[in-house]
Image 1 (cartoon, rainbow, N blue to C red):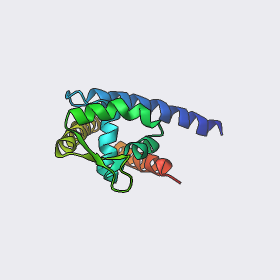
Image 2 (image 1 turned 45 degrees about the horizontal axis):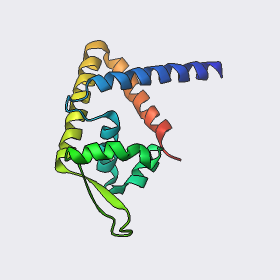
Image 3 (image 1 turned 90 degrees about the vertical axis):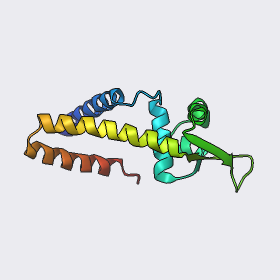
Image 4 (image 1 turned 180 degrees about the vertical axis):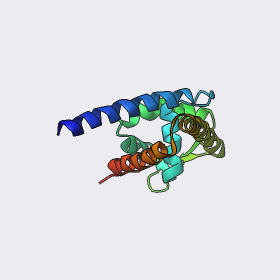
Length: 142
């Protein structure tokens, strides 16, 4: 059990450091990490309400108010009345929002690809590929 705990600690530390490093690779367009997360959710799931976005991120809808306002102001999302409930708005990813998301992903992947290529052996790359798949498995919703 201690070995599993130690591995969990190492994984947490490494994933935190990787997430922080990936922030550095974010395009200098001013889009926040929370904003990029919203754009990513809209890209993966399609049109959502603020409540649905908040539930997906496990935050209060009020926590997204400023993020959504900034994304809307920058033309990265659009809002329209919900066809099921006119009191709510649905949120869509705009073409500009998709381009910002694609650029962020490209820059992050470029940096990570370079770092992996320069520092890891083919065997280590295979191990990392396996680890990435296992991490995805751990993150799957039950």
